[in-house]
Amino acid sequence: MADAKADSPPSGRERLVETAYHLFSQRGFEAVSLADIAGEVGLTKQAIIYHFKNKNALYGEVLAQLALRLTAIVDGVRDRDLEPDAKWARLMREFLDHAESRPDDSGLIARELLDNRERARDKQRWYLRDFLNDWVDLYGATQQGSGQDLATQRLMVYRQIGAITYLVISEATLGAIWGGEAVAQMQQVQRDMLQGDGAPTDS
Image (cartoon, rainbow, N blue to C red; front, top):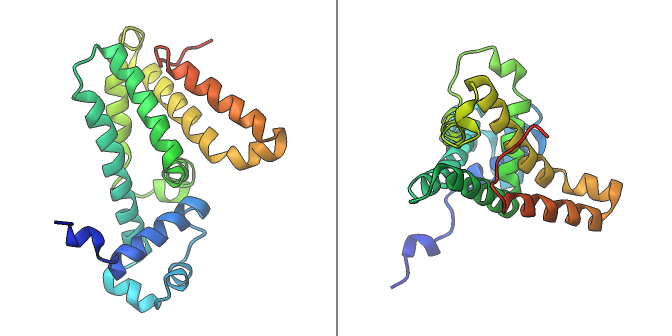
């Protein structure tokens, strides 16, 4: 018997979150208003406020769902019976697969890491904190990472996340500059590199 919930149309709340997710990914938090989201969904601002008291609350829900998807990737890799270096390589490949299948997740990651100078001044919940820390833990267990201090481990992880994320979200721009074939070649080189040990290097 089919899952009735899976076949049912999304609720108003779900449509709001999905629409906000796409808009926040494409434009960033500051450039999207509740009116923008309401207009896309065909609701009023008051309807959004019924579900979410303000834009920060809606953005928090979008990030919470993103964090769940990212955590599922990490947990799936962590639970595998693999040596630390193999786990790290697997994590890179699975994150790349996810980034390519859900480019708006990549856009949201980039926005959250880059666009929050104002918000970073205030104490708040950071939904990507556990995601980043989990990656540092997995990388720190590798042969290369275990010989590095924490600052270097964090830098290497950040570089690798950035390399995967930014190539995905830059595809259209790089395609306009260098051509689609050149970007496809870059993507293949990146995938080939991650078929190796998957570890970032200083070279």
